[in-house]
Image (tube, rainbow, N blue to C red; front, side, top):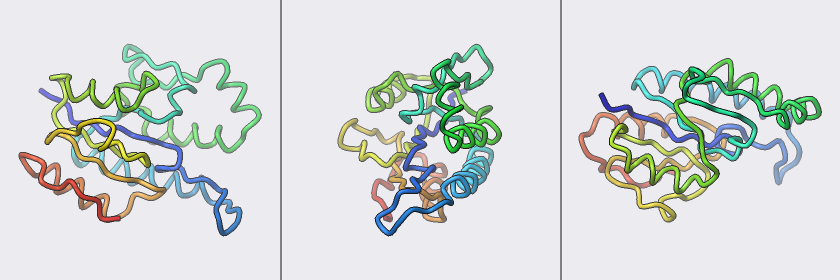
Length: 176
């Protein structure tokens, strides 16, 4: 049976910055937790798995044989000691979505997506990212790109629902 996956960016995609043009905020972790709760609902409703395309891949040692565990690298453990917000974000990610991961970026998210599209083990691929990867990698009819800028809302749910219910991809535009 083929697996359906979400290629997930984290920073600026579902974990917004507290540095904004209108001033500094303090609610990024709250927004992340809301997004993670919504993401779990999506993952469970459509039986999806996760592939981390985020630059956060450099924080973890991930091996499929570790039952989907995100194992912080030694350098990450040190960073977690000095950056309380990143540590709390890590803890939320582990709490909500760690068990859904099936892979992690090699460092080039465009190439990662191309490789996943070429892999016969994967059926539908949803790319949630703040980079416009449609231009960098030729997304096939098996892939849906959703531009994400901080919040999983009803439009994101609509696009995923439509894509998962169709045999081929018709929806390739953004509602943002």
